[in-house]
Length: 299
Image (cartoon, rainbow, N blue to C red):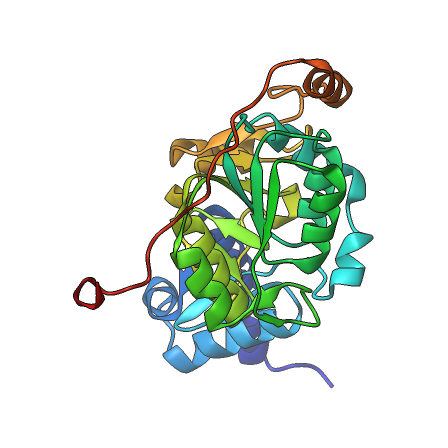
């Protein structure tokens, strides 16, 4: 049975709309249903159906009022540990070059953050803060100046602490650097996460630090999740693997984010470890700065 000509035309137009929607997502990072309806001259129902079909196909992720490009990052920590290990290692090592003595450094949870800690020289003269129990254990093994573990309810999927206790601890902290795991990031929506509680914690981490480096690999660039963490301008640096296409990075550089690649920020971890362990100088311990949570009228 042949399909009626009107149905063929509708399918053709639908496929064209789908291609245009995905092209807009790749260039902008996010689309709004109302604007799409105006652009294509179709009803709100038609656009919602288009977005739902693309979401069902795994091409995008629905958010309030529109959609973002789908991130193909596995949702469980165990799966993420096995994905893009070489690329994540390069991203992690490039970010090591931002460390300085006597800093207070926030380290996120996640598989790339774990590789960052693995690349960290032993006995590094800095204080590290984290809300991820496994990251805290790995940091302790590196024997830096100090390790502060922030508590809360441990999420079984991301294996980090979340909740009001965790957020409040970061709200009362002033750090030099935040090493942030990236689920999805684009210049329109900014940094985002598929989990509400995790997004709230990361928002507090970003707000607490003077500089923020996002650890990302190419499949996370231009993508997004349902919950916003911070605008892209909150990133001072974006650390990536060596072979990311320039066209993927250009929007971030235009937004004022400095891109770090392994070759642009080389780190000799062995030499750094040797230098730190063999020098006879005494390094002054930095006292972590916490903002008081007491009200002025309570003093």
